[in-house]
Image (cartoon, rainbow, N blue to C red; front, side):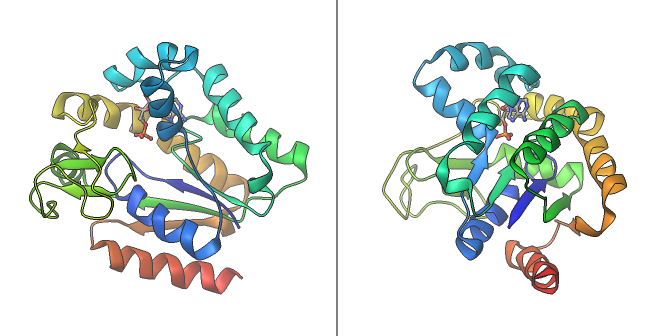
Length: 218
Ligand code: AMP
């Protein structure tokens, strides 16, 4: 399965990604995670990406396309992948389609999670993430049992620096202007691979809808 997971920040992509990679045994390729890893390790890419991420803006395409290209050359991607957070604009979508074509690969699914801005802002402002295993919490809806410690691995649970209300609003603006057109761009190429899902329900409700649709496709 080669899947692209689309949707605004805070639409629940991370939670659905977990189910998808476990079900289809495919690697989770999140450009946001790759950038955060580079930031943590203070690499050249991390230094370039830092200001963009902190302002909620897109890291330049040539940098982002290159990290995806390198990732798609790793052997674990042979049987498929889940792309999360990429492509983020039409130019990246074109670059991705070229990368796939070069490798003789087809896309199987574009999952588009739709959510209301108010729900998104409330979700993101309360979102906390485990530094070690990436598990996602929410200060009100899903707090950790012990404050700031992950229930699963005991890692430190923190708030991403770009998960504040001001940056979220900027990220949403960028999403509607730059990223939403990608869905129609891909839909125009092949509408049968695009699923629009309302993401306002519980994680399980959204998962069920995705499962049913992907099940029918196989
Ligand atoms: P995310 O974790 O997907 O919300 O990404 C966090 C931040 O990383 C974004 O707000 C961007 O600054 C940067 N980023 C992630 N993916 C991309 C991408 N495909 N293109 C440009 N910037 C990206």
